[in-house]
Amino acid sequence: MFGSKEIIIRSGKRLIIRPMRKEDEKALFEFFSRLPNDLLIFIRHNVRDPQVIKEWVDHLNYERVLPIVALDNDKIVADVTLHRIPYGWKRHIGQVRIVVDPAYHGQGLATAILNELVELGAEFGLEKLWAEVPLDSIAAVKAFKNAGFRCKAVVEGLVKDLRGNNVDILIMVCDIEQYYDSKWLRKKESTGA
Image 1 (cartoon, helix red, strand yellow):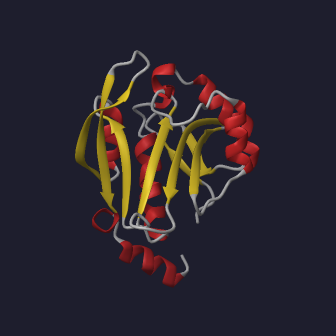
Image 2 (cartoon, rainbow, N blue to C red):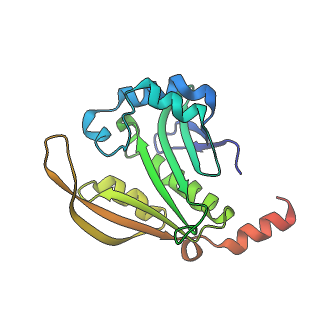
Image 3 (cartoon, rainbow, N blue to C red):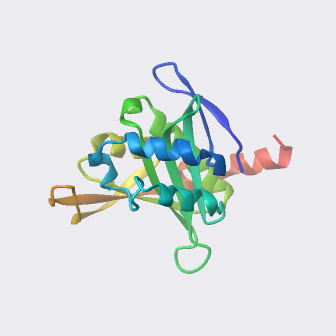
């Protein structure tokens, strides 16, 4: 599994992406506290509750959920999670969730992190990655498409926004074998690179 990696976004700024650690609790809470309410509607937990964040960092289990953060110095500017199911009919699928600080939108950060998740998915032996994206979130759809995800379905009115309006959700799937050349990964492993 990867440790940390430096990426350069469009602005020329250098960021570090790495798995979340227990000591990220305060920075992660600060990250979610900075986000606008309209962005939080699509997050499945009350991330403005410090106890929720504490629960996450106290019970890290990379085999079940791999959280990756992007850091600008010590400030978390993005959080992405890869959820895996160890058994059953979805054991070959990973579900992806991503949140990026609006100040870093349009910089290629989401695509860079999603590309890392596709590679990690291949390393973990997953065949597909799955994401649910608000249909009207053009930037998010573009980032997922740039990382090899394709539109598979639209579920009309599946969720509600803060004002109680129904929002359509786009189901996007990345077929890892088609997008990511796993032969390269096997070659990399056999050479020890």
